[in-house]
Image 1 (tube, rainbow, N blue to C red):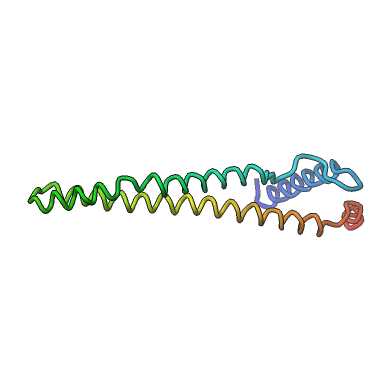
Image 2: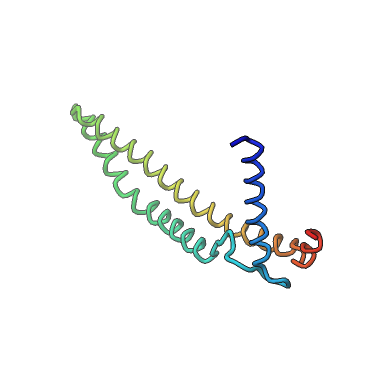
Amino acid sequence: MTFDKEWAELRTAAAARIATRTNGVPSEGGGGGAPDLVVHRDDLGAIGNDAYDLRTRLSKEGDHARPATFDAAIALTNGNFASGAAVLKVHDRWQTQLKTLLDSCAHISNHLDYTKAQHAKDEVGVVGDLPPISKLTEYLQ
C-alpha cells in the first residue's frame, strides 16, 4: 500500500469518526455522549484533606524518636562506644526521610487544592466560550 493511499484511508476514517461524534450531539444545548474529562472536585478535596491530615499527624508523631535517639547517640559516643556514630547516623537518616515524607504530603495536598481551583476556573471558561452547536453546524455546511 502506498503512503498516499494509506493517508487517504486514514483521513476518511477520521472524518467518519468526527461525523459520528458530531451527529450524536443534540442540536440545542448540552452534550451528547460521555465527556472526555471528568474530575470530581469532592474527590480531589477529600484526597487533599487526607494528605494534609497525614502530614499533620506525621509532623507530630514522627518526631517522637528524635530526642531519644539523639541523646542515646551522644551518650554512646561519650562512653566511647562505636555504636554511638551509627545511632547518630540512624537519627540523621530518620530526620531526612521524615522531612521528605512531610514535604511530599504537603506537595500532594497543595497540588490537589490547586487542581480543584484551576478545574473550576477552566470549567467556567470552557462553558462560557462554547458557541451553540447550531452555530458549529453552520460552519460545517
